[in-house]
Length: 401
Picture 1: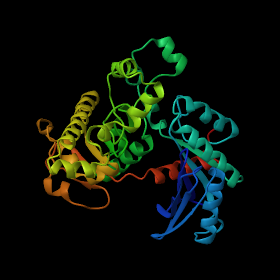
Picture 2 (picture 1 turned 30 degrees about the vertical axis):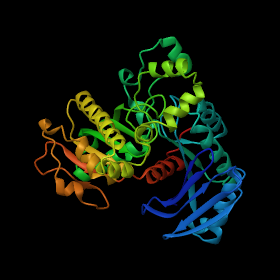
Picture 3 (picture 1 turned 135 degrees about the vertical axis):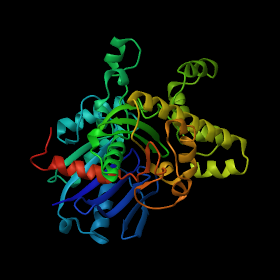
Picture 4 (picture 1 turned 90 degrees about the vertical axis):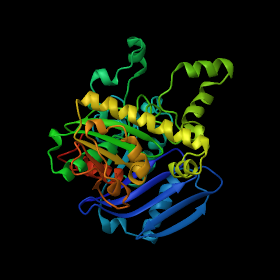
C-alpha cells in the first residue's frame, strides 16, 4: 500500500491531499474552511473537477465528516485506495522532534505543549490530529515537522545572544521553518544535476507569501533565515522579517500597543502589505511598473533583504554549487529571480535571460552554461514529501516513537 492522506490543519481550516507515493500522483485534494463561522465551505477536487458545498462547520470533527462524505460521494474511494497512513504537517517540533514521528497520545500531548512556541500554528494542527485520529482510528498517523530538517543547525547558527538561563528556560533559539520544502527541493536539485547530495553546497530560496532561505551543506541545513517563529528573516507578504527589537519597545511606549497588537502588526500588517498596501508579488510588480512609489520601495526592500542573505550564506558555506528558487514567487517571478542575483556576477553567477523568462513546468536550469553556479527553478511539493516521510515511518521497519 502506498496511498497516504496528507493533512495540513489550521485553527479555522484544513487542506488535504490523497497521494499515491509510488506514482507521485495526487488522487484528490480539498479544502475545508471557515470552521466555526456561521457559514463554512468544503471543496473537494478530483481530476480537475471541483465540488463545493457551503454550510455551518462548527469544528474540525464535522469538517472531517464532510471530507469523508466527499470521498464517498465523489471519490476516489478510500477503501479501494487502501489508505496506508495519514500524514500531518506540524509547524513546530521544537527540540523534541528530530524526525517524522508516529503519533501516539504522548506525541499529541507534546505537540500541544509546543503551542507555546507556535501559538498561531500548532493548536490548529492538534485539532486536525484529534479529528483525524477519531476518523481513522485503525490507520497509522504520522507528524511531519517543519522544524525537523533544521535540527542539524550548529549551535553558532541557532543560538541567540541573550541571557542563556532565560533562553534555556523558555526554549528560545532559532528553529527554522519550511523544512519540508527545503528538504524536497535540495534533494530534487541534486538528482537533477546528477551529483551526490552529500557533495553539494546549496542555497534554497522558498519565496511565497511566507519566505525563507536555507544554506544546505551535504544535504544538511546549516543556516536558515526563520528563527524562533516564522517571523524572522526575509520580507514576506504580511510579515516584517528582520527588525530591530527596539522598534517594539518604541511602539509599546509611544503608541501603548499591547503584545497582542504588536504581534498582529508584525505578522499581519507588515511586509509587502505594510509597505505597499498589497501583499501579492504580482500586484507589487504591476504597480511598480506603473510607477507606484510604495510598490517600488517594497520591491527594493524585498530584493535588498534577499541579496543580503544570499551573500551571507555563500560566505557561511565557503562557496555554493547550486542556488534554487521555489514556491509561488520563486517559481513564477522572473523579475525577482533576476534582481535577486543581479549583483553576484563577480562570483561568476550568470542568469540566462531567455531561460529565466520561460514559463515552463517542472525543474529547469535558468543560468548560462558557463555560470560558475547552477541556478534552478524547482517546483516544491511539500505534500508529496510529507507523504513520503509518512509512509517510511508508518511501515514497521521505519516507525519511530
